[in-house]
Length: 305
Image (cartoon, rainbow, N blue to C red; front, side, top):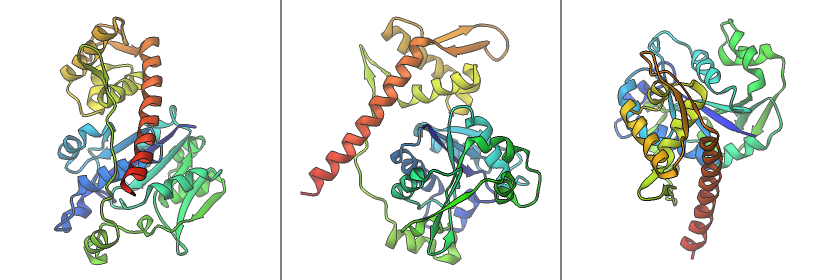
């Protein structure tokens, strides 16, 4: 089962403006922390919806291997609009999707895994009787959520779908903590939620030179969805020339095409990932996942001595 995630960092509500009132907490660092937690829990596809300070946000997170969806109407958009944006993008490639605003960044990998174990259409974490974030829902609810036009946001869309909601008790107050000065967020982060030291391994395939890594992986995913190299580069925060450099380097090393293209038009024509490219993506994804798990296990064994 493939799981994706949508992080709403557009600005209002739930986005980066919350962090501007904090003196010692950086918003992009918090979103990076969220991305890492999702990765550790096995989430393959992550979308960050941007708007306010979008270019700065996308540049800071460009190497995280996520997709950016920009909302220029972030001043008037509602949280449900960000859900719909990410859901539209991920629904055909993922079976379930986490959703979380960027001002609730302190949930843990353990909470995500506990939620993933629950066999329900909608899963909500519960800490000391209070509902929190992120929310996990099946993409089978996509049509119902996207067609909702009421005033009760995501809750109204979920309630309108008629499915049952599983409330999962967790020992993680991070599902409730919002980035608010009045709630003492900075002090809580420093005292109870400091960044955890961990082993992080970057997997690259190398021939005469490095030719396949996280950047090309996420680019190929987007080409497979969008069928256009230029649009795929834009979604991943990568320049068009950089994208083609990565593709051509890989094809030179492999001796075969990984992107089939038909040139033409102002957007560069249509493109698709070749069968060899898709095989490479599957193998790389498995290697990256198993390498990360091995590194986490050995880190615990070695550093606990």
